[in-house]
Image (cartoon, rainbow, N blue to C red; front, top):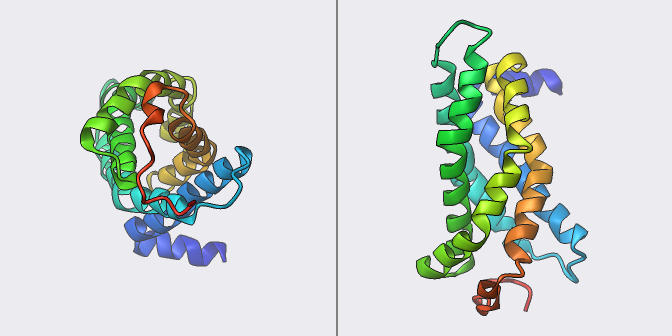
Length: 187
């Protein structure tokens, strides 16, 4: 089974990473719903996480990680530090912002409402991400082969996605008082 997976990863790295990572992203949402003791599994919400991961997050990470692999500055021992810095300063805030905005748009919020929600919670989410992701990426860039990096990211993201899901679904901010659009399957 492991050899078959490795063969698929070697032959179809993008497709394999998308399918596996989107499944992990969806599992993170299921975990979040379980942790928050949702009365019923919201399959549509989980589907949004799956498709957002498959259609946006993993493709962006796939391209970004390949770009970072070409960054050479200061030798092999210093390159991973530069990559972590670039990842956290240039990529993380952008991918995090676009992920949240797209998630809310998929939930049926307007762009204005999504921006208001982003204004209220993104600072906290980004600050908290700095306690997790730099160390994950340092391990990634020093020890993990390129085609496996997304899997480390998405494995850690299982818990991170649960945190993100809880943060975006259970916000105590006034914007959360905006009625949920009729796209939710929990009616």
